[in-house]
Length: 536
Image (tube, rainbow, N blue to C red; front, side, top):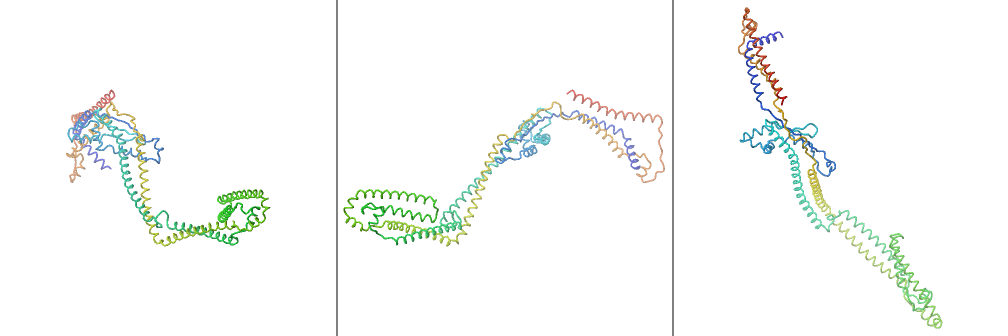
């Protein structure tokens, strides 16, 4: 520590020997710095504030229906990338600054200056952006800020429109491509169905579904055939117990007595018998409440009433002719012994014919279903291949249709997004129009002048130290011994006389006076500058 202090004191004594050099350098640097600060041109700052409102009521209302990008992130990114060379070139044309740039070099310098000095920044969390620019000419500064505000707003709206147009164009191209693919898939599917229309597995249903359906139809037809066969056999057995003809007396007695030549109800009885047989067939499959059963019974009741009316009419006629019947007993006996067709036998014959026709129809149906079932079973080897090809075609068609429908939905969503942009989802509000402060924003001479004074003092001290190192003087015998490498036997001190001491005191007073004059000049200049700034 002692060595360091001794060495430091040696440097100070050496620099003190060249203090006049340092004083001159301080004055030169101070005067030059003072002149530079005074002649610096005033810089006027123009500012503008823009607020971007992204909280529109349409955004929550259109949630899920329209594409809603992150507007806050887009605006933030726009503010970071807006100050670029192409945008600055556009700004120069908008502010008419290109009239001042005569050459390409001047234009490049102007662009570089604007890129360095135009400021666009946000104010924290809120979407409030401040545009500022400094220039010696207030009017030009205001023009630049105005052009920057216009460029910021147009870039925000134009970039969204450009992105929307590009997205819409891309979606339209994809829709056309998928529409062609969908049409091609539909044609392939149609050709496959037409080609394999009569084959199992090549149409609407799968093989096993068709096989099960035909098997079910065959079983039902066989059941109906067995029922019809049983009904026919029952009618045959009933027919064997009836006679084709009966005596006229029995027919007349069935009417309550009368002439053999009276009206016959065989047709009505046959119809009633046939309907009763139909009811027996229906009751084997359905209940008493079935509509067909109820309808047949109503018809049977109506026919029975009609038959009763015929019988009553015939009995009335027989009563009128009672005298003539008593007078001719031989003729009556002869008529009673005559043979007439048995109406029950005729009814059974009609019902048997209907049952035979039903059996024949059901037999044909069973044969047809059996043939279809055999055909399906024989073509079972083709089924896996046809079903695999049909599934592949159908899968391709479904994929293309799904993509096509999704693209159409996205196109509609993009259209709604464009309408939302047109209604102003993100609104640019000019909170504070471009304005130039009447007082210069730079340079701040009250700060620059002390800095220049400090720089002048540092420069003076540094120059004295440098000269002392270039032309060293030894003030200590130990230091001389260390530098020369030889022992120092002694040293001779100089004793100054009275005149010499007065001379050195005058020189010190002059030195400190010069140094104080420099500081006083700066202080006076700062007071003057402060007064001028206050009066402005």
